[in-house]
Image (cartoon, rainbow, N blue to C red; front, side, top):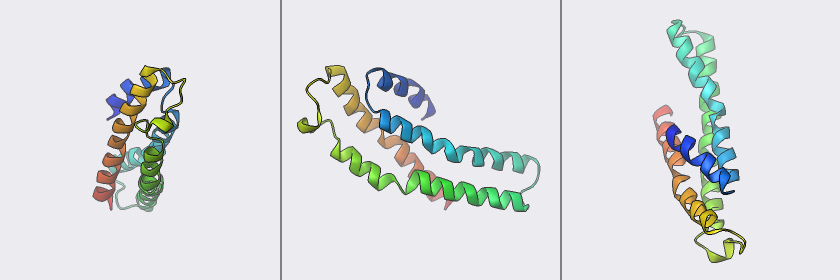
Length: 123
């Protein structure tokens, strides 16, 4: 999914589509450092330490609060702003911008599905 992000996000930014979604999905990586720290602590054989436990708690809370809990609101927003609804497409939008907006609505579901999968695995 990171490869898709590297390909699509600059393209969407170029056609001026989906900036809010790009920023949100980028911000979800805020929970990532806790996962990296976990791996470092494992390598240092500190799995039974307080630091490992606190880091795991911070990871779980940040992952849940930032990646999982917003999903219903994001889906609702995607539905309300759907480019398949003619009233949501400003007349000045180019054909490319409309096409990329539609593609973004489809592609935007991938990170949410992955986040739900990982939440299930974590919890």
